Amino acid sequence: MKIFKKVLSAALCSTMLLGSFGVYAAEPSVKDIDYTITNPYKDVNWDTVSQYKTALHTHTNASDGDITLRESLETHALQGFDLVATTDHGINNKGWANKEDSNYKFVYNMLKAFGRTEGELDYLGESGTFTNSGCAYTLATRPNGDDYLTVSLPDGTQKDIMRIPYGIENNALSINAHVNSWFVDYQDNTINDYVDAIRGVNKAGGICVINHPGEYTKAKEDLTSDIAYDESNWAYRYYINKFYGLIQRYPACIGIDMNSKGDSRTRYDRELWDILLERATAGGKNIYAIASSDAHQSDKINTGYVRLLMNDLNSAEARKALESGAFFAASFCNGNQKELENIAEYLQKYYGDSELLTKVNAVVTEMQQRVADVESGKADADSGPAGPLRLVDGDGYFHGKDTFITSVAVNDTEDTITLTTDNALLVRWIADGEVIAVTKADEGTSTIDLDNYSDKLGTYVRAEAFGEGGTIYTQAFVLSYDGQPTEQHYIYINIPVIDALFAEVRNLGVVLGRVFHNLFK
Image (cartoon, rainbow, N blue to C red; front, side, top):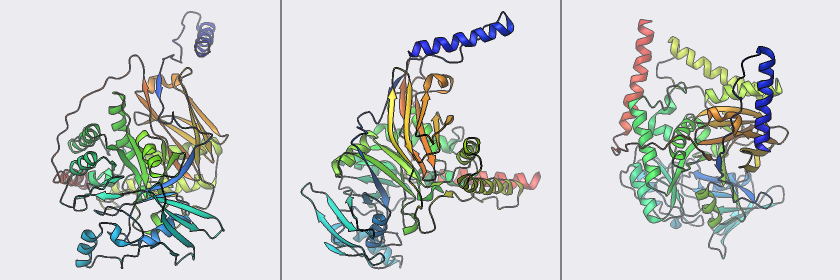
């Protein structure tokens, strides 16, 4: 059937061209390549699986958060979370009932000595009532060994939230070289580099991700996508090789955080993810990406999260989903001008004027104006990009229907990938960092036929579903085929800790370049 479809297309194309010109027959516009598609969701039974809203990175006043554990968990419950990892800096979370359950003392007491704490620690005990909502709760360890917070919600229903064990943001004393890990009792509060934490988690048997790399690399300061993660720049080339080398060397590191805390810092980290994917998938390896809130305040809690695809709410299933890529990253925020311009273009094309388009266009206009003002000298040369699109209200609540990807189907015979969506408007298909197709999604399914884009494909494709409920990111689908790009080898040199200065030097060069441009234009 697939071959017949391609041959028919070629024949029709040739017939039309011969009829017009009489002598010239063009090559078929569709190339039939036998792709093998590795689907990270292949073991998911979409008829029985549940999608669990998960917070993998969040803070309390045990380190530098502005909210107590009690306030954080109350907000997570009201915003529909099913799993929460409390990941304070340098503090390995071992429980929510009593402060003695976590190794909070070093960081908390150090901050307290400098007058930097945000109030007293407020743990939950075995039961109680949340102050702001009046919701009653119980906290108990079940026979499977996991801790569950059961909350009586205002609508009369009960919600269980499972505590992801041993959540921590490692490298508390580093310069933003932060690594989130879970499922293992590991922490080291000396001055560390990425490699120290990742190697330690790997040896101890946990899993981890590199947090908000755009903060370390200072990509967050770049005005436009063409500057961020430009491999021709020595500093970016160093960081890209470093991150890639760490992920390749230590299996515990499953990937990176590419949209967190409202996406100001991470606005270009999808571009980093694509560079890493382009390198890794040529050798058949996937690199996963998460989204998170990195919430230090309650209004950030719902900005980013993941949906774990699990058959039951327990830590074994959660770990399995993270290690296999059976999850979606999700965010209500987007700070990337190039992405938003593309989204606005296709919202207009497929749906015309709408309230959502107005919101997106307003943010795009602000971003474009900021770039123009910096380039013309009207704004300071060190000004960063304008603020992101934010689809939650000022308190962090979303008032609408969530956007979902409800199933993924891969057909290796037809070389197609189909997403079934709910409340999505667009699906953007990305390969090698470029949008190769944008499909209309409001009828519930979006399909890409890889043969139609064979000239644009390397060794992976990934998808982003967008709607009023934000963006849902799939993990990458790895492609293998005859004639595919070959795996390249990259030199991994690590200069621990002080390599954070590389970003400062690069950023200073960019700012000085703007200054001189405005002086001598």
